[in-house]
Length: 373
Image (cartoon, rainbow, N blue to C red; front, side, top):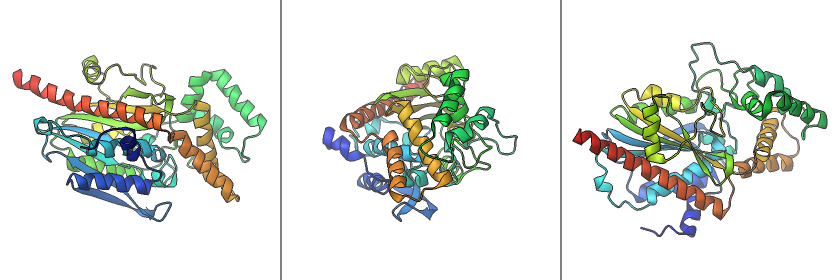
């Protein structure tokens, strides 16, 4: 095993989607693990192939599984990809003792956004707002309708009166109310922010297909969905991401991962979302008891992150005849969600690897208790 020093950790991270994908594929090859690739029929930012890649580390018929997900929000994939690559490369001490247990890595669920430095998919859809029942009336977010034109005005940077109107909305509804109006999810503005779509996206369909193939025999399922952009710099907030409201389920999750936050109780930096990806886990893995967390790493102050998001969506909506400014806007979005700094990367790896190991230990402990019962 290579020593997990700062240089090794830094090497897990990449400067582009293409580099991140190659490191992930190389790590799988080094372990002799097969890769299942779902290619998207669009080119990457540098003309590269775009794909959601899947690696199963462990027995195909395992009844216990840890699911690790990266790139739900494309540009956030730099973080999750590094975690997955590191988990494939790290020491395998005691691997034989992981009875009936596998790790399923789903790399770059949204490869288009990852490559093109967008948070959304090729359909301009926020994937974490797309897992809704499209056969029923779609969720309505009246708050977003009030601020859509303020968030993405015709002129960028926004004029003073635009920012004043947005501040007035925040004064009326509070900071949390503005966050809810903006990021809850909306289905009324296809060119807007946090758009949930009018139908399942390609990424939605592929993710469900992956679960249908790899998880039908799973009875105990743990999931870690890696995100960035909310919270304090380098801190990985562990957000409870199981839909089962039984207090015993939360208690079990906290035995594994320690204290967790919750979007429903208001203890999380995030808010409840319409159509998160965990919906698919619940619907496609009905035979499994699911314990999941979103591991949300803080980057920079929320004003910087929100400003970068607005600018990039403005660019998508209105375009820009200045190539240099367009490139700067895209780079600013990448920087907002991926601090390319050694201390941040170290914090990411230490917390993520611990979360993964705790999940595997929890699955094994539960199995041992079941045998003794």
